Amino acid sequence: MIALRAVEPADGDALHAIFTEPGVRQYLFDGALLTRAGTERHVEASIAHGAWVILQDGEVIGLTSLRPTGKDRELTIVIGERHWGRGVAFAAAQAAMRHGFEVLKLPRILAAVDLPNERSHRLMRRLGFIPMGEVDGPKYRARTYVAVNTAASRS
Ligand SMILES: CC(C)(COP(=O)(O)OP(=O)(O)OC[C@H]1O[C@@H](n2cnc3c(N)ncnc32)[C@H](O)[C@@H]1OP(=O)(O)O)[C@@H](O)C(=O)NCCC(=O)NCCS
Image 1 (cartoon, rainbow, N blue to C red):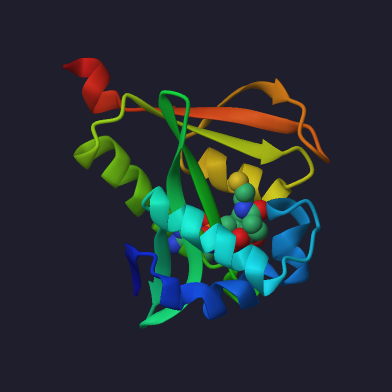
Image 2: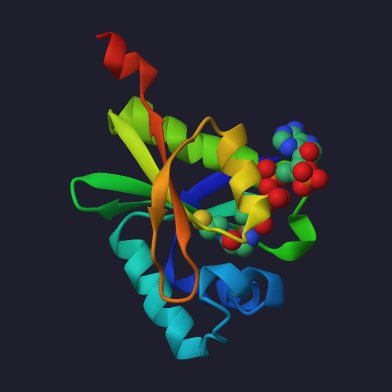
């Protein structure tokens, strides 16, 4: 059973364990190994923009957010490697998007995924994101995506 709750300072240890996994940091932090202080800064920024931890049976297994970027919000998501391949990220991202569309009434949600991050491209397509273009990133070029709030575009 997946649930989201607002990220708190006490989530730092669990998130640090996830952020430093090889498969996670490869694309999330361009391979960089975050120090505990680096995770602390990430957690503080996440709290500031209203990110959620992803809970499975009460355990923190990831983080998702609708991070402000200009006038838009961008979906971010990460889950620990041992939970990959089971639809857990899909369920959590859907919950975040529902909040964005139904509560925040966003007209659209953006995403950006490093070109070699195949797993994440599959996730974006399953979530209904449409490819928009490509942009340069610090290490990899990234594909940009948009998901449109169909309820908002009908009203
Ligand atoms: C990107 C990331 C969140 C994707 O996780 P994931 O587990 O692959 O994603 P999903 O939850 O959609 O699971 C998909 C897999 O579960 C399977 N699955 C099983 N039950 C499912 C269900 N009920 N619904 C959807 N998929 C299901 C799918 O078939 C798919 O299998 P596949 O990988 O063999 O194609 C994860 O790889 C991650 O945290 N990576 C590091 C951080 C990162 O790169 N984040 C993205 C930056 S934008």
